[in-house]
Amino acid sequence: MRNGEVSYWWQARGIPPRRPSLPGGTEADVCIVGAGYTGLWIAYYLKRADPGLRIVVLEASFAGFGASGRNGGWVTAALPGSRARYARHPQGTSGVRELERQLRDTVDEVARVCAAPRMPGCATGWSRNGRGETTPRSLGI
Image 1 (spheres, rainbow, N blue to C red):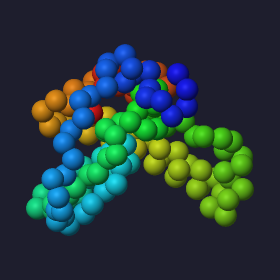
Image 2: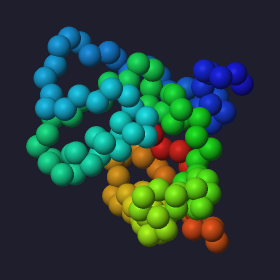
Image 3: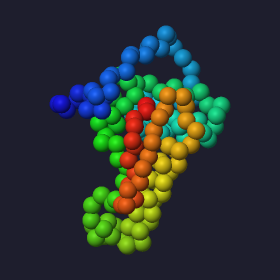
Image 4: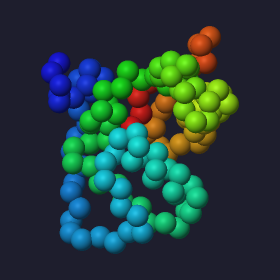
């Protein structure tokens, strides 16, 4: 596999059929460009906050095509880098502890969302290992 190609996961599963393009102009309260983790996560939370919002997610290829589709399927609360380096920030060690708490809370939130009732066709399973990380057992985009 070369950079820019679809991920191993999409190659193994098969690329989804192309969905039809928008037939013309459309109106929305919110337009999100990109159906990767960030775009879909934003759409999820906006719709949850205000079910009446008209949200359009635009994607050039298919959901999970880019970097999100090349993710190894893991979520971790591990601090990326040195605690000592982070502690040099003006918030010091208390800032490091707060960041680590937020990282753990984020993993818990991803697990909570995956356990909640989902849209048809979204089949994601989760398991936790001893490090507080979670890994999806199946891909459902």
